Length: 265
Image 1 (cartoon, rainbow, N blue to C red):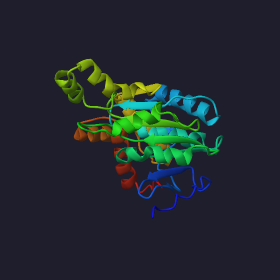
Image 2 (image 1 turned 90 degrees about the horizontal axis):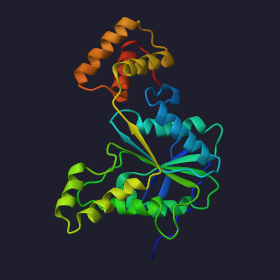
Image 3 (image 1 turned 135 degrees about the vertical axis):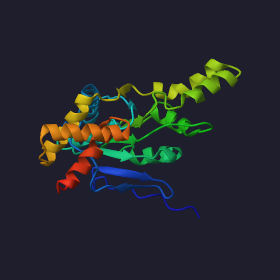
Image 4 (image 1 turned 180 degrees about the horizontal axis):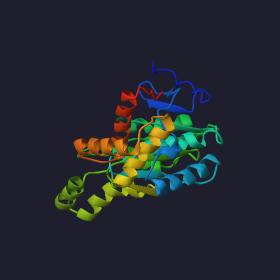
């Protein structure tokens, strides 16, 4: 009466897949939403470190799981997708599998589909964080390096988060104040982030980097605008948003391209 086992996925269909449970399946993504890695400004150290780690992994060498954490809108998820795209030509067997945070309890079944395949897989979890009474992090701990089977040799996990320890500070403080053994309670929570071998921090950009991002987009997509106009409009745009980041730079550029009649696809 149980359903038949899921058919083995055809990983030649695409370079990227999205995991969906119930029923378990890996859905191919024909066109990945990403930008060239050279357009990501102000994240040089994180870019070089992640590129080197991913190239090692794609070549069959040992590599670390990576946690990209820090300021919102500064290109954490964009960097993961851009690095994968940059290495695709040299390593066509390198695939990316996106897993949603709410699907983490089923992640073991996803790994069983990937285990033993000839391809190499970046398992990507975007905007990873955990709140009060959220036990999803326990599923992830076993994937990172726990469990009797361990993480498959052909899988590495890249996650992005606004929080370095993946949990709000007040949650950690509450554990410390209410637990019988405060240090053990906190250790249980923060040990998850310790299981990532690479911690790559992203910080708010300064005005020069912000303007350089927009100029890079203009050059790449052929939007003609003089430096003074771009500077005045871009600064006004970020002032109305109350923040300055790569995301805000792209939003301004999208508006600019639309006004200048330039298509981005």
